[in-house]
Length: 180
Image (cartoon, rainbow, N blue to C red; front, side, top):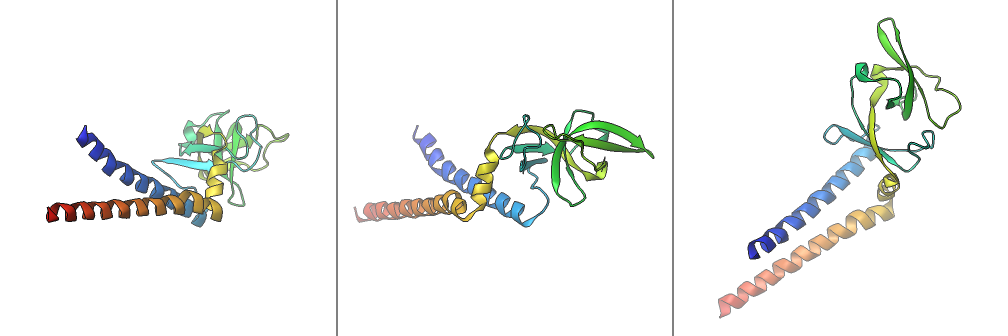
């Protein structure tokens, strides 16, 4: 039992630091890049509009994965870059082969009209796998100064203080053993 407790005392702080570092890395990577961060081939994206209601809505996070354009079919939800290089996530309404190249026509489920742009394989960032409701609000909040303070700085400071406190206790205990 004592070995388990010792393992937990050593593993938990390491896991906390790793988790905090991953959050910091993902925040700075997403801020400094126009391309979404890829984690093990998956790309989390925050939904910014309600064009796909009722499937998902603004503030949700969708997880996409790169996919070969040949594997896409009508009804799939894809994320693609428009002419302004913004990421859009809409449903494929039809696929046409023109000059040997597949072209995708898309529409947001909540939009009245189809998208004007024709999407090609090179425009596609990935296919939607699943979504997590409202997680995008937390993600956007952590990018702000208050969120950064609450979710990054305070936990990291607490961990450092706890580590220093434990080291000081160890030193005092060792000094006590050497005196006796």
